[in-house]
Length: 211
Image (cartoon, rainbow, N blue to C red; front, side):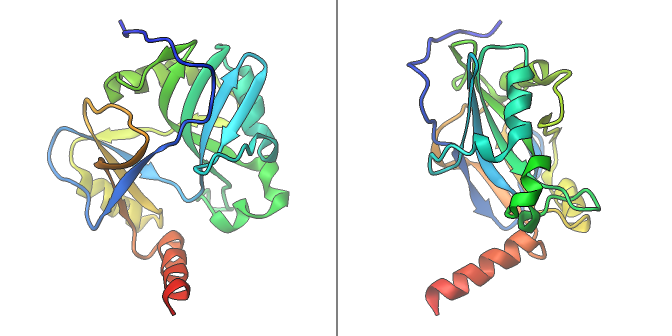
């Protein structure tokens, strides 16, 4: 049974930002998720109102109609989901370039990986495993627009190697039992595939910034 704490009136919640590492942690006690190449979105519903906040607090719900429609279809009147909105290419991989094009926004959807609030209950102090159980229940039968991002428990390197082999952006690793904290986190770790489009894009941006 989850403990309950009433939230303040709905407002923007800054997402938790994992720290970059060269390789993911090995051994037990970790939950590992595939990192998809898209935009971070905090999807909030309050009765009939849906908002989809970027990391900087911009509401992009109108840009991604499938995400907003799926949020309205869920059997809860109030929640806050942490997710990544993506647009898939012909091979089914998330493509950042497609996501930036207006004509592909209707087909964009969110990979949801955390639940911060549900029906007025603040879940941020709950262990991550409990939040994921609640998120799975919330998304059961959800229409296109919101999908649960599965996780792997245990050793991170094999999953990271598979993510790299498939050309994915990488993985995010989170300690079992961890709470949700906004802003930079040294507990949550992200290992990026150096050959991924996202890594190449960041390298170019870094070069342009310091040239």
